[in-house]
Amino acid sequence: MSRPTDRLPYTPPGDQQTAGSAPPGRPRLWPAIAAVIALGLALAFVWSNPKDAEQQREQRATERKAAAADRKSYMTSKISVGEVKANLRANWLWRKGEVGIWITPEMGSPSKYVEIDAGGQADSQESQFDMTWPGPALVTLPIENPPQEITVRVAVGDEDWKKGDTAPTRLLRLSPEGTLTDVDTGKELPTRFS
Image 1 (cartoon, rainbow, N blue to C red):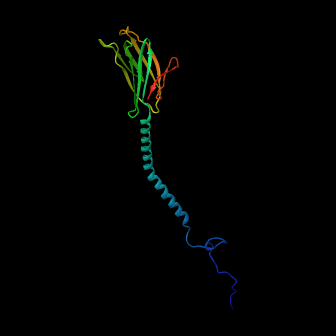
Image 2: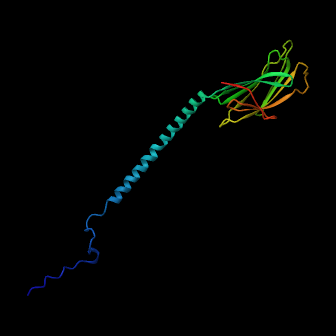
Image 3: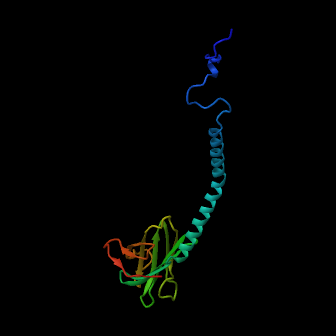
């Protein structure tokens, strides 16, 4: 006698297939391939990024130097301190990162003493022998980043000034944009800036 053929052969439970599932065979490789590609891209980014960052730093430094070359750097103003007229000058040396500020009595305006004080530095000059006015008093300060206003105290002694006398003073605020302001009055003083 023959057996009925309407029965299916026995399949172990681990090998059984559900309706709509993929046939057994190779494992799925796409997730592994995608992970390897992502890892490769991440490593390439990490290796190339330091070079890009260094190039960006160099480019920014070049741009800063070009901008510094275009900046105005010399300011002058005629001011009165007591009875004496004097010239106040400032020269921003952007490439060196410093600013020099000096005061000189105006020729024909008799003076025996000048003094300048800014940023914790001070300098003074007295007239010597047959000179009717002293040489310039100068201070050199570092340029802060970003450049800040500088408060400057100047003192000028007239022709009657003697060693030990207190000379008339004036407190001024100097900006890197070339403006000069009297701190006591708040009045902006005329300047030439180039």
